[in-house]
Length: 107
Length: 112
Image 1 (cartoon, chains in turn brown, green):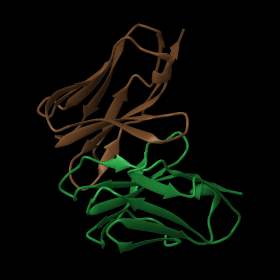
Image 2 (cartoon, one colour; image 1 turned 180 degrees about the vertical axis):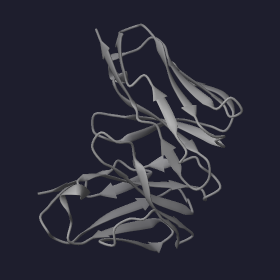
Image 3 (spheres, one colour; image 1 turned 30 degrees about the horizontal axis):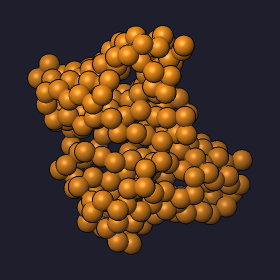
Image 4 (spheres, chains in turn red, orange; image 1 turned 120 degrees about the horizontal axis):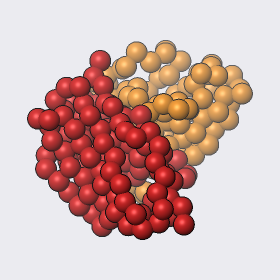
């Protein structure tokens, strides 16, 4: 079936630094969403992209359907950014989730 | 997230019957149940569009969905199995061709 490969699986950042998460898709997807699962277990919608890039505060995401990948950049990481981040790709009627990136931001 | 609410938040069951509830206040036509087992990403269980069941992703028959109106979604569970322990997320989107999803906060089911 369609695969969503998400990396890294775990990431540790010091406060104030940044990094990027990436998802590769085995087939062409029509859109991608990025979520953060917070400490209460809720899935928080970060971005929805059908193409191009979006930016919201310290987060920026890009989606290239032709090259089959999406990225999520975090800059100036804060303690409250800790959590598990999921990309999810849409090819039709459902989202196929990546395996998640567990982010820990420490002081 | 008050746009899409789920209840209960936590559910501990023996071999009992119970229902999970979801209600969205977004005017969306499509509603979904996703299951997230430990150490795995969420996976689609059911999809409704305009109150019609569109997809059943080969879910065991002890899970019975119900969509009494376009803003509400129920998941009835009978004779639960330990493998059913998971977080069950409700989600909605404008319709099945619009994939900008909003997820509820989930119901954590523990089968003992």
